Image 1 (cartoon, rainbow, N blue to C red):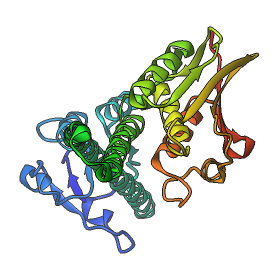
Image 2: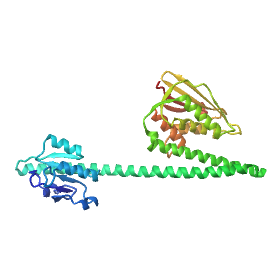
Image 3: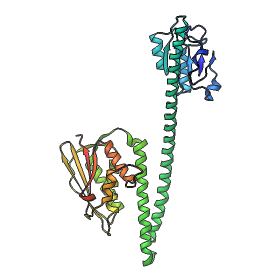
Image 4: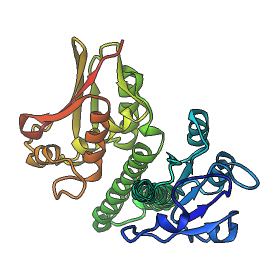
Length: 349
């Protein structure tokens, strides 16, 4: 703990009594800031009087806060008033402590104990602020890394899938099945990069921003058209959609894209088929994504009953769908033994 003392500030507790036997810190008294040691992280907390030799405690606090945003700073003085307290806290002081000027050893001991507690509390807050800052910095770096990796992987996979597709007319009949497996796995991995990108956007990017009225019809038509291009062999039918806006954001298309991917990729046969319908019921609208194969899929029920990353039943796309819909104030579930996805969204017209 660094004590920046002013000779003209008659605070009751001298710096050599702040540490005490019970405190978890050592105190050091100075008249001016040792900038080099502050920059090295030598101090966990700064306590300063208001009346100092070359400036006041509010000015010192403002200067420290600019260069050390998470360092706990306590202004401790017998010379302040409500205006000084307000200015100190506005300048970034963690706490403001008023000293009792009474020359009494009992008062000094009691005040020393109280001040130690305030210092220890400020240090605890400072450690938490530093932890949050480190976590935020790590999240930012992780976001950048994920975006770069997703972009690079997607580019390379697109080249691989493109070259593999060119080989269609060059392979023998025996090689066609192998080529189709390469193409199928390449496309699935490309879809996974989309999911990863959307998940990053949802957690740390713009996707976590405010919910806004989103035109459902436009989102569904755009998503269906996109999936038809991705799955040219599939039949994707879109029924009538009530003209309404729902509580969502730009990532609503990711919800339906992932549900369509799941419905199409888990059907057997060469001609997968999915039907989408939407119906308004008062203040909500329900969108149904139906796997036309009619096959029961217990996997989907298990996934949406336990949509947590790390669960053996949950992949990242299910987690993304569940998390987004929940953020929108809606709900998602499966019906008919897993053959139908139902997404319920709030209407905000």
